[in-house]
Image (tube, rainbow, N blue to C red; front, side):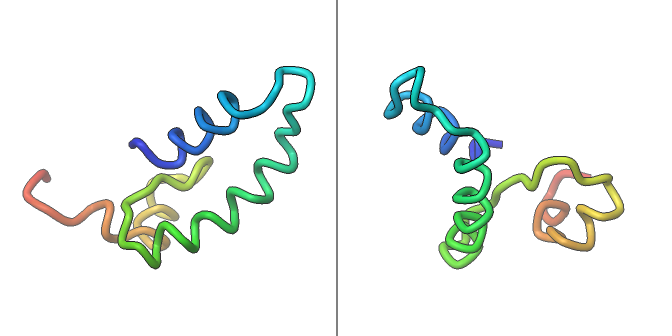
Length: 66
């Protein structure tokens, strides 16, 4: 999925190499998930098992592909 990978690419592109704080990025990204959801953007939550993902993101399993 494009999101949240696009956010990570932007973080890497906009920050100087010696100024990247991935812990801070993770905290900000958790708030960004709310914005994605409000905007109707389909995104991937990292580190979820399939059954947990089906509960938290059922829209990822809807559609013509079975």
